[in-house]
Image (tube, rainbow, N blue to C red):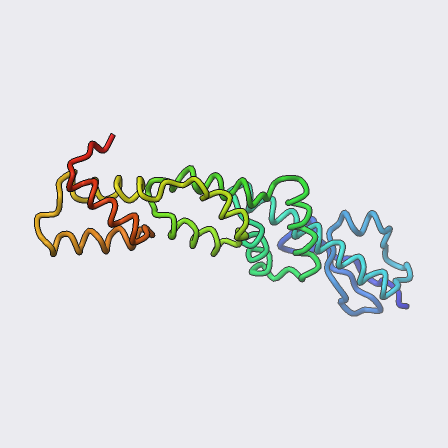
Length: 206
């Protein structure tokens, strides 16, 4: 136990205050938390209660920080966690904030994956889309379900047609360059092979 000797507004944020017990700085809290917990100068302060207040305060700050970040950019659960850890929030606060965002539907990995495919579908091969989604923390089941009907061959053909301007490769060097281009776009060997065959047959790109 100790006595709260000073509650001082922070210079950089007037919505947060510093708490001093027996003349020494103990922690920073939001003004809202101080009011809700009825903390005031001259009152006795319980150490465990203050620790709990700091944790609850951290959770609220983490959630608000995440909401601000989500307003600017859609994120997966993994990206949201990485963002908050980078901001140096404690693990308990990160878990709370991300869990709440998922509960409210602000973070939804399945919808994120669908939106990603709607933007990048046809511009990348199946392998690249799968790799990009996995790196963003989308689980394998969501990815497999999403890409089950993806036309990898069609994507490869469209990419190849644009790369070669609708004409078959002039020679083996150009064909190899085009094949490397498609591989870099994440197209499978089978899709690349099929794309060349279709282009060489003179199929319409429409």
